[in-house]
Image (cartoon, rainbow, N blue to C red; front, top):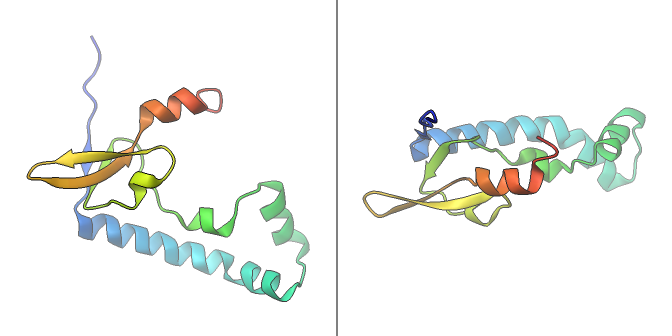
Length: 110
């Protein structure tokens, strides 16, 4: 017998506020790095962090709701890697993390 999975549905105002807040924090953390990079100025620590860990500032700005969370009204994330479309009643399209695909492709990392 398997346990039932709990699914969270975030209303558009909720997930949009969370996404905007995350992006604002990510902007604050990456702003100086991006400004220096645009001027060709090196920084020994921040440049190391962005090259060693190979995360791009744009990747850090992407907010993810997490597993078993549905975002009604979201169609942007459907095109993102490891996301899928969800149909919700009444005739609402949303997105959610495609856990099956994620585990199939990233099982070793997990």
